[in-house]
Amino acid sequence: MVRQEALAPPGEEPPAPAPGRVGLGQSLRRYKTALGGLIFLLLLLLTALAAPLVAPHDPHRVSIASRLKPVFWMRGGAVTHPLGTDSLGRDILSRLIYGARVSILVGLVSVAISGVVGITLGLLAGFFGGKLDDLVMGLAEVQLAFPFILLAITVMAVVGPGLFNVITVLGVSRWVAYGRVVRGQVLTVREKEFVEAARALGYPVHKVLFFQILPNITSPLIVIATFAVAGNIISESSLSFLGLGVPTSTVTWGSMLSEGREYLRVAWWLATFPGLAIMLTVLSINLIGDWLRDFFDPRLRDQP
Image 1 (cartoon, rainbow, N blue to C red):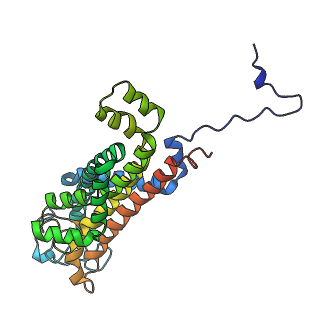
Image 2 (tube, one colour):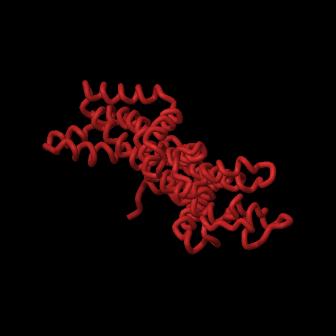
Image 3 (cartoon, rainbow, N blue to C red):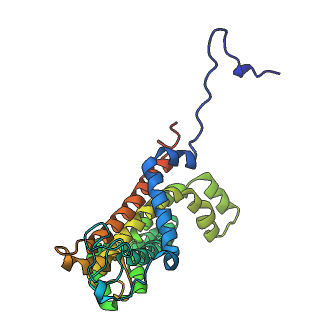
């Protein structure tokens, strides 16, 4: 039996089917810049994980005889040190590879901490309201009153440098963005029929919050987390540049920048390559964040 609605009048073309929702992979293929950023980040992650196998030299090995060697294409450069060496003869390429480990670790773990804190507080404030809402939002306003970098510098000066301290400071001090967004979303979603039905069926509060409400407000949180990774990488580099981040015994891009600033006139490669690494990593993350923002936007995601 032929469906009547599928037929078209004689001489006319049948109506085109309505476009379906653009899939994640299809959307990513359309955004060439985001695809390039994702490829770069995946290669960076794989290189950082395989640093002992990929790095040509020990990043801490000192060789005074090889100090300040230029990049391989300049006069005096060597293929064994393709990006040159620093003031102590340590290989720049190897230090960049090992430094990626710290930047990625700080970016991801600090975002996880701030996300857990912010999402939890935002859910509780938006769902219960009242004095709890006033307390959480008041705390957020107080924290927003202090510039982040000054707050981080003050805390790090008190607790001292260290990888754990950097991750904790970045994670705890950046929960506000998650908390405010989640609270606003919860104020809207908590009045929906499925939430009322779950409460009427006697669901515990934690199941209503984390299994009914949270899955319906994750789209903006993914975008916030993506941009937060880039921001935390820059913040860690800034603190390490000032000597308040990770100890100098640990290779980071920020500490490499700090060491290279004294040799900008005679050895430009010391600061240039760490700066390029930070710039390309942050740019790639921001491109992916722009793509995710457009993909999760209901006004744009269904466009062919």
